[in-house]
Length: 435
Ligand code: MG
Image 1: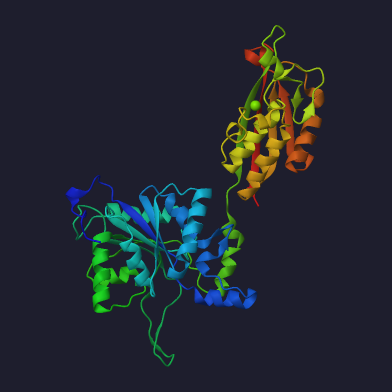
Image 2: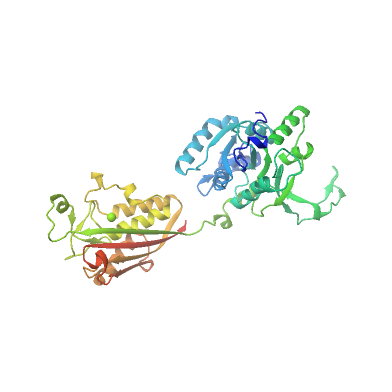
């Protein structure tokens, strides 16, 4: 790595080209040992599962949500590199980060892992956020705060016209802190008001940080964070407010945090679905259209005496709207993507199959439907007598109590295509909760 690209005139735009280095290279020995005693299997803490994904992936997700962050470098223990490369590729395929990422092997000490992570950054990178993946609860707001301070704070030294050289998040200290002698007697009580407990992500201009790491190598400095290197190299380090929740998973006792309800605060989701089907007109003669006309199915039940519906599957407009609402909850696209009507496999298919598959996807992303509200809009047939049975059938499909499903029917007062009895439409809203 060189300092090339750091002159202000070389910048492609006023924004810093900022990447993040996610450290997941530690041995996590205290926790690994404790787990090995319990289960016979040693797991590094950065690989522990939190809500269905390894700890380090939670940080990756958070950083990927911040616009200023243009890419990620994951640093893993050398012996896990191959396995973790495959895992990151798999996680990214299942839930794309939307950012370029690289993987590299870490070193013996934290500062070695950071240095190796910096060396893996692309050549046009100007700034870096260094984060310990054992802090999975850092929010995108905190990442943004550090990134913005790096880009916008008035600069006292350095080659750029704005932005701090080094930014760290810190919390006021509430405990009184003592320094102690080796014999466990108190030496001193520092003034609490000037103390800060420091967290990650820590943000830096890349060139001065890289230079500080080179000096640390050459002069055998030992530090516990990158800010300490910058301080020692004579750079100012700005402090921005940290976050109480941004704790570091360090000891076996901290594992309880991973299952604490506080950290399961996934918001409820609402999915919305809409669908329209055309009725077969009495004067319609086209053979293909006629072959696609089906007796009316609605909400999974047959509606005797209803107009015929043109459709590829069984033509159940209400279950199609419901399928789209469920796919909305799962952020899984729409029914046309999943079950294309060009695919013969879905011809005459009961629409309950679509609902069941969409429901599977909702569950796969950690949600369960809690309530569904559906509306059918049709001038004909009269649906009032069928509403309760439709609701019961849908409740069964969603595995919900009947009291949590509501089916409404309305007309459009003779207006539009439903009013002219040329077709039918349906709207579905599904509320889902984590779990
Ligand atoms: Mg449809």
